Image (tube, rainbow, N blue to C red; front, side, top):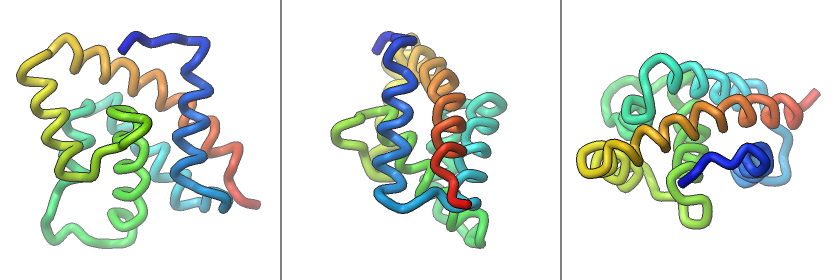
Length: 128
């Protein structure tokens, strides 16, 4: 999973397109993309998938709007063609971190590069 700079923006564009479908990005969706970027930089990939997979009483507007965006983008990071669902996403990243730390770190670095492009494309498709 090598980071190819010439493909990264196209990949990020595809991820945003698959998340948003034909509708424009709403402000809350854009905020969720920006939060993901910040979370990846500060806490890491494992923490981000942990947030998506949490099942507790933290339901609220922010979580309701954040989780679908994060699940989609992080799932596509792991497997663009068949993104895993929440539980499988968590299991895949935990397994990767334990059994292949070099791949985990490479995937995290890729997510950091992608995040800048996710931010750009989410802004480009924001409504109004």
